[in-house]
Length: 66
Image 1 (tube, rainbow, N blue to C red):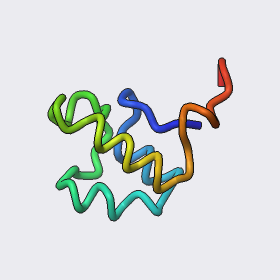
Image 2 (spheres, rainbow, N blue to C red):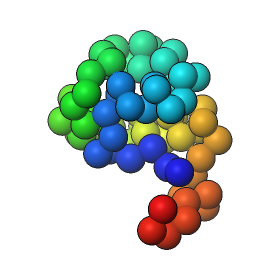
Image 3 (cartoon, rainbow, N blue to C red):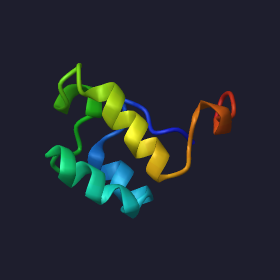
């Protein structure tokens, strides 16, 4: 599974606790709003890339429909 902008920091940290440090470093609170609504658009791509690196996920590991 790839971490996507429609996921919330709270849900992401529940599934992948190891992402907490990334959120803290970027000043993103543990909220239930989607990343795309609580992170500035210009910061979102780099945050998503860092989160997915931490959890070992990429577009290559994503299975269509799941």
